[in-house]
Length: 66
Image 1: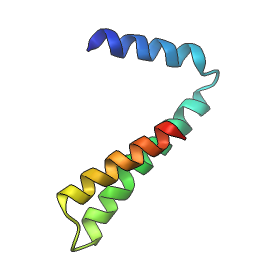
Image 2: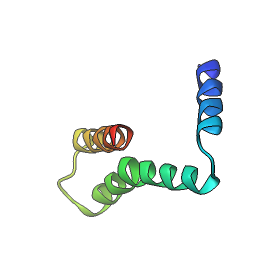
Image 3: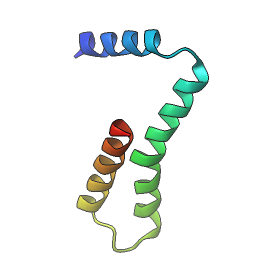
C-alpha cells in the first residue's frame, strides 16, 4: 500500500506544474465526495447511511472520471 501511495504521489508531482492546480483539484474532490454528503447528513432528517455512502462514492467517481 505504501509503495502504491508513493508512486501515486510521484506521478502527481511530475504531472502537475503548479501548486494551484493541485489545490483546486483536491478541493473539487473534497467538495463533491465529502462536503455535500456531510451537509446533507446534517440538515436532512431522512438521510440514511446507505444514501450518504452512495453520495460519497458517486461524487468521488464523478470527479475522477471528469
